[in-house]
Amino acid sequence: MDISTILDNIYKLPEQSRLTLQNNITEIAFQKGHILLKANKVESNIYLIKKGLVRAFVDRDNEVTFWFGKEGETILSMKSYVEEQPGYESIELLEDCELYELKTENLRKLFEQDVHIANWGRKFAEKELIKTEERLISKQFKNASERYLELMKDHPELLQRVQLGHIASYLGITQVSLSRIRAELK
Amino acid sequence: MDISTILDNIYKLPEQSRLTLQNNITEIAFQKGHILLKANKVESNIYLIKKGLVRAFVDRDNEVTFWFGKEGETILSMKSYVEEQPGYESIELLEDCELYELKTENLRKLFEQDVHIANWGRKFAEKELIKTEERLISKQFKNASERYLELMKDHPELLQRVQLGHIASYLGITQVSLSRIRAELK
DNA sequence: GAAAAAATTTAACAAATGATAAAAAATGAA
DNA sequence: TTCATTTTTTATCATTTGTTAAATTTTTTC
Image (cartoon, rainbow over all chains, first blue to last red; front, side, top):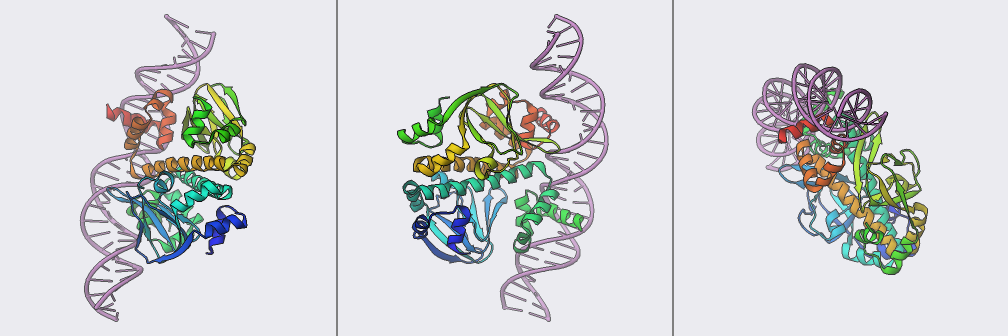
């Protein structure tokens, strides 16, 4: 996926501002299995996914996947990006990935200098917020089986690309529970 | 709570920008029980809470409370604010409230005109996003009893100000389960 | 302050999900 | 392909949470 398409999908920027932003972006590739961002670390880059698939997870007693990112989506440590604090999430590449890299520091400067880029950053946060809020509500309204069906409907390709252990974790259940749910649906 | 304090707590604005924003804000009061925002309606205002307490809820078969707002916090229909689409949430006043009112339309114009206000809007969304993401992760990591203890620790005053049915709903459990949890903790 | 209404707790049983272990299936490496 | 490893499913039993109904407590209204 082309960088200008990705940027425009978040918020349509005037040509000049888009080029300014693009000038701060470089391309980089990593292999499946690579840990791109590490928990408890202030991360200094954000990434836009040109190609590939990643997951964000938190690791306490058990490992909980709470986000999947695919083509067009943005990878960042939210705490690092927003508060310049160590984040709670790690990012693992589930496939070989081609990424666009952008230094948080540069982005912060652009936010101060260019009203359009500031609004691009605002729209990005707002759209992520809506997605997160919808997931929270879904979690509160629906049982595991309904959430699984919802995921199948909204993101069927994830089931092809991600192993079920991660899907189960994302849905907030154990892998055993997910297997049971899948068996009941047959 | 003073309007300039509320605005500055989100993001410290230069004097001039803060005054511009304040010039678009009026004060208004409503009584406990008033429904401030209605689901499935494009809302044209956002509110900052000077005094009082509100809840956001979604109403399908059952009613689910997914947010409480108190002094200093911002009330809005996220979908209306972000996408100018009908929202899924209603807002009910749990106490008599004094509010600061701001027209979404005016705010949108200010976002285009003033880079500081655009960044204020960005910070607002980013901070809400972190809070929502933390709740989602808490929901995935912790059982009901742990989430209750966490709420007691982080927002003890809510338990004084909100009836337990709403708290239970916020925690994603039934009121009966919450009663059981509270009994076990004694 | 008494009666009515609303909120909270308790109890009993049902359903959903978790934990552990083992079996089966799928994937990857030699 | 074949063997080893990883992933997924199945089975059993334990725990958590839900459902319904009734009892109790608190709040509101007259």
